[in-house]
Amino acid sequence: YHVYVGPDLSDLAGNLMDQNQDGLKGQPDDVYEATFTILCPDLTVTELSAPDIVSSGDQFEVFWTVENIGLADTEGSWQDTVYLSEDGVLDAFDTPLATVDGEALQIDQDYRHSVTVTMSVSAAGGDMFLLMRADDSEDLAEENETNNVFSRPITVKKPDLVPTVLGPAVPVA
Image 1 (cartoon, rainbow, N blue to C red):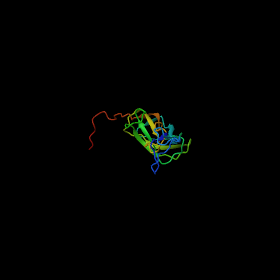
Image 2 (image 1 turned 135 degrees about the vertical axis):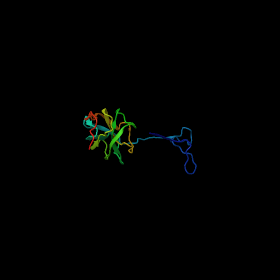
Image 3 (image 1 turned 90 degrees about the horizontal axis):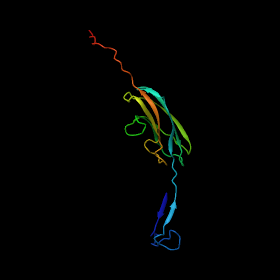
């Protein structure tokens, strides 16, 4: 970041100040300039694993790894969320399956978490995606908020419903 202060700055007594230290006070080019860098953490999901095929209603384990690739340690709290997605892109149509608290991370440090989720019986069947989003609510100030989502394919099997009675129901006496 760059900060420019001036011109026409004065001290508490009203004296114009010489920001660029050229000996002339209050000139249009009399500006103090400073450059500084804000160091932030940067979380990214580096791994997401789960079974390749699950059936609706099944419970299964999801594992993921989050790494801090930023230039500062994390401070504060955040949550990681597992989503089910039809298109592999996180949006309002995706279904959250589980949310887990993140862990404090130093620079270049990572953590591995897991959670047991249940595949919804109302989930569309077929080829879908599991998504993991670190810092799901963007609670943590990061260098890059666009690298927090990792996607992997998953196939959701729906039960084959086959009628077992092909005639009129038998009355019960």
